[in-house]
Image 1 (cartoon, rainbow, N blue to C red):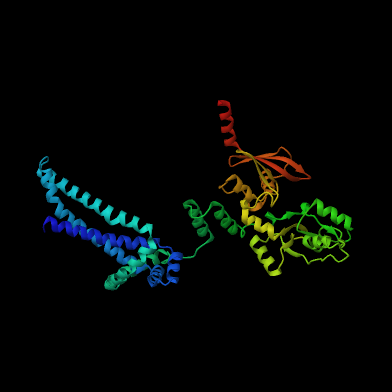
Image 2: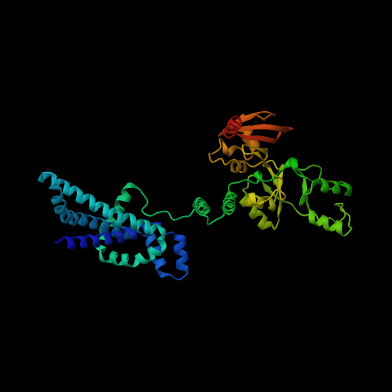
Length: 442
């Protein structure tokens, strides 16, 4: 075989190996969601790729047969065609035996390098750029090859299946898409600029609803504005002015005996129409939706939907009222930073680049997000708020000036009101030290 014929055969083998490499990477990298979209748009080839992904054994068997056969044949042809020319070159400097060994090594390295670049790296990089479009083009020829080599495919596939069975490993990949998968995709989209960072955060907040309890966003018991059933109109007006809310529980004697609630809109309409506000003079009393404090925000949303309500009383296992929650509270959790200070009382106030002033009842997830804390908090299942975190870390009720150091931050209690932690100063220790060093140099 002449050198020209050998080189043409090597080029053909490289092209064939590149075909199998491209077929392998495009099937593995193709996203099922994108393929399903293409199939729904009428591309029958995408449907065939989806079926192959469900049972990829025969497909990859043909790929491996092709790649290994081509690699072996390429090595034989390359060594036989290039070694004589390298031997003549090395004869100028080395003895015949040394020149022959060097020629074999040089031809081997040359063939490996050419195959690595043109038959492996290049086609795989190409396939990763647009896997779905290339996969639908490769599936037809690959199915022809599967049919042609079916006896070999059957033998090798059965042998592989038997090995998986002996090792107790699953023969098929899990195609279930989890919330973690979706969040990873949205994070990648945000890094690529496809999604705005705030849009990605809203999506993350939606998935967080299933893990956050109602107690993490409720208005706590000590902050509830409520009416006695026999409060005079003057008291009602004064309380509405002092504590404007969208709804007010109406109680009999104390807050743990809730009769219902009145909607602020109903009271506003009565004021505009000149009607009295006294609860015994026609103000509509709505039946209160009561939910346990161990529900997640997702479950509360479902309760709101079923009851056609947007306000609920939260009780604990002893039937004591621990807080109230509104639909707006849940949506504020979803919207996150998109909700401005005019829409809700700020619980996290940044004082400077290294310190924050945080309300004790702030949900611990919001604190982690504000401080950009990725590490899991200790005993995270034992509390839901920043105050709870401090109590667990100190193993007692915190007092003013108590502090906890964790994760490079110092959490110092600034104000306590009747055992309730009002304000906590959080300081980034390392950042504060660097700022102090810069100020000294200046």
